[in-house]
Image 1 (cartoon, rainbow, N blue to C red):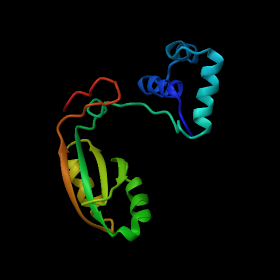
Image 2: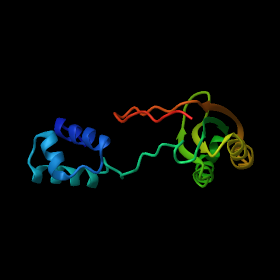
Image 3: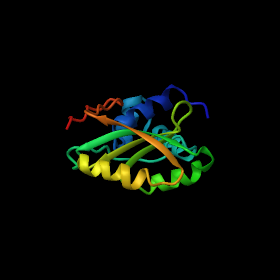
Length: 152
């Protein structure tokens, strides 16, 4: 699907505030309310907009320890590994990579002890996981136009 400047402006506006009323969205991108509604619906129907989420400050939500974890796996078992990782509630993002590592995870936990437990007892016990490297996050910063989250 080819997106024009108005579609891109709609996506940019929604990425800043997905709860914006259609009337205000239309005013922001300088189109009629009916056109804004039709474009919004088309972006959903065409799978460009796949859902709506809430951005949570992990520290204020009680997740004081975060880490990016790189994982080497038996690549022939990617589907199974992804399913097992998805089932771990502390895993917030999973990306399959090309290059030195097979998978990149964002893991959030209550504290360092909990983070260690997730790594040793949940991630590293998956049979197809060969090794992991953990990179502790000291501070998060949002890049989609919202204010950065405070550090721990």
